[in-house]
Length: 73
Image: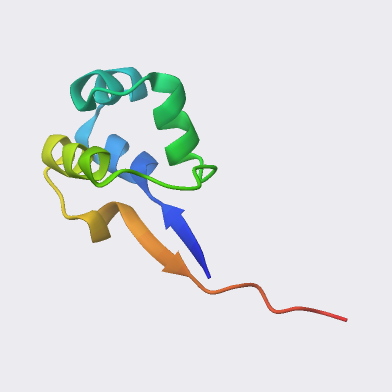
């Protein structure tokens, strides 16, 4: 099971830049990029709550579960 992050969609809908979102949330643009590109291994609930507050959304609006790709072979 993989968790996909849809922050790009949320940014586009709200016409926000990564830098502006990072500043409002209180994290570095580099850390936000790690999260939005799906490379984060974890996210703090305080960061998730801040993202939801700034983006005016629920956690499920920006995170979703993806099924694992079937193994071939």
